[in-house]
Length: 198
Image (cartoon, rainbow, N blue to C red; front, side, top):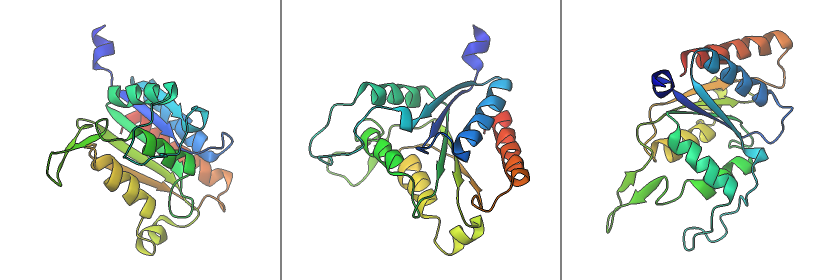
């Protein structure tokens, strides 16, 4: 029982809608290595969840969370470390992943604004995160030419905003021109992250 208590609780959130994608192989590589190193690992494939990704009323009216979102919230709250795996599409992430964040990272659940103030309480403190993102251009080009828009959105405007830190990033690319040897090297790189539980 003591060993179970001391195990790191890791939640892998896969934002790619296609189960045949390389993102699923990356998530599995991390998961398998983390389990072998003694972590407790749960995987959330957003594409498998049944929920409306549209925040229909913005923040003016709360939509009741579907069972799959309640389950996801429970797993996020239980986790010590969140691993987000997703592709970069048009400088952002897939619509289903954006909808997952819109519906779940809500006032009162992930953060709470202070009364009569621009400041807020961060409700997800005490957790760390890793972003593993695939891109179809060199990571340096995405950073210096485009300014890392998807990374900034997830890392700074979402996770750190809610108190999760540090948030580390692993950018993998160029995917579309990669060969099996290159992909094997990337899987090995991610496996080592899982082994270290970081």
